[in-house]
Image (cartoon, rainbow, N blue to C red; front, top):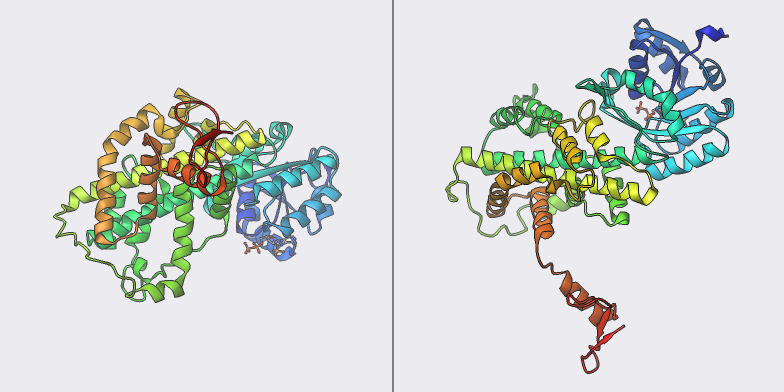
Length: 484
Ligand code: ATR
């Protein structure tokens, strides 16, 4: 039995890599950490390998684990999403008492989090769905943490989470995002943005490699240089590393040995599904998710290769392109497309927040994404400033700083899309982001045609630009207009 003065401030359930790294992070920061895993070997391994990094209280039953926690008890679950998470939540809730806090640190779907919080509230347990970003390394050395759940839980939990989160300019990368599913929703969109961010870097690579004919090593150097400017980010930095890597077995660039079929675990897809339900165009994220799906459609790709006619393709030389100028154009196209993806992601968060009355502050998100997480980037400081200047900004693209940037980027962006088309290189996010941008700024959209069609075949009615009301043309009659 554990003596009362020897209780743990925090517990971690689920000691696979993310869970054990998080437990070690708490222990290294001076907390006594209770640990439990369904199979006791993982618990024993953690204690054997890292027990000297701090104070751990290891248990082999849920009951002992719960008994080893100081009240109100705080236990973070880091187990598989879905049924495993539900099972562990219920085991903990059975052993816990009123006011204790269960934190789900996995990648749960926000609607599951909403349900779980409701169920736990009925049992007088606090439930906090917390998005944790940063992968294994982040969990150990400082992740970005996005906790939802009741505000009261944050009072207790806040200082603990702040002590393990990444810190940028003295500010910990964690804050209470909003009630119930807000934290997991925001983490989901964060991952969606990550998909788009990764894809635009991929598209830049594709253009430089197969358009400008540069080697992976040369492109790695270009990315290194970009990493010291506006595009300074973790993803650009690691891409430079990946491209510089040489395969030990073949001596080829590693990138040429890796199968070009991208995997996904589902958070990007969830982001797009939620956006569809909210009616928010997240075209950059959507194209990025579809690009991964297309890349993995290996049979279809094999059937199409050498069969689908390419038409008359240009070459880099025949287009008279200058390599350095092209590199700079690609950098600008990447920047602009990335800006669109972030703007759209923030639109989705605003819409989700309004739908669920979460009151999420977008400025907070940009602040806590500056460190610890995969999309950490210098650029996020600009987003913080944009929301400082106008918390109600209708679109990030309309912030004064970004408008200035876009004035510099737009011509390069258009040139890159034209060149990509002539070279026959796919740039789904670059191109769709430009279409989104041109749609936003268009005075007239072809939606008027759609409304005409809808009225013709389904009497769905249309509005008129010159007066209020709903109108219908008697298409199969005398084609006069009636107000309905
Ligand atoms: P990995 O990251 O090693 O692939 P995983 O299968 O995703 O692991 O599972 C992550 C964690 O969820 C593990 O701690 C796992 O416990 P075990 O080590 O006992 O497998 C835990 N987990 C999965 N399903 C569980 C369940 N139904 N009940 C309790 N814990 C579960």
